[in-house]
Image (cartoon, rainbow, N blue to C red; front, side):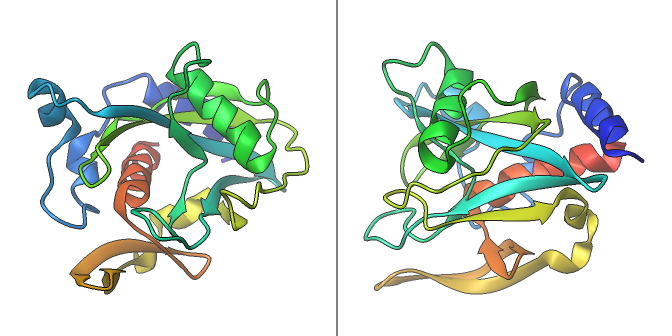
Length: 211
């Protein structure tokens, strides 16, 4: 399947009923409150958005991740999608995702055709509700990380999500006093991709499996 045809197919699937939290929980590190439950319980969560940026290279569909710098905090050093919390200048959550791409990896705000959305993910530890948006960039410009927020930019072939050998488990030291046991993750470019990012990727994988 050509990259163009795959983009059209993914766009079509994103417009249908999504796999949602059934896919998320396959990669959830611990039993956690779902996004639907957090909304139903009217938890005063903080809204945020991430961008799943896809582009074509040599007829391969590729995706972008970033690695955060190591710091004392909930998400220090983690691999994630470009994104962050809503700012008062954002017209909507899509604008949040686009703005964060511009700030974090120097992808211009107007770049990227919106293909659709995936299901929101609630992150209890930081009380964020994350809305993922999927974009296709036809001519990817040269990207550069904002080193205050991004240590490096990672690129990977989207099709590797269908390779079950990259789905692994490990013990992760979350803090000096906390280690989570048997955490599921995707091994992508020799990086441990876990937590909310892996949950979002798990749903994207289910979308790909439908095609």
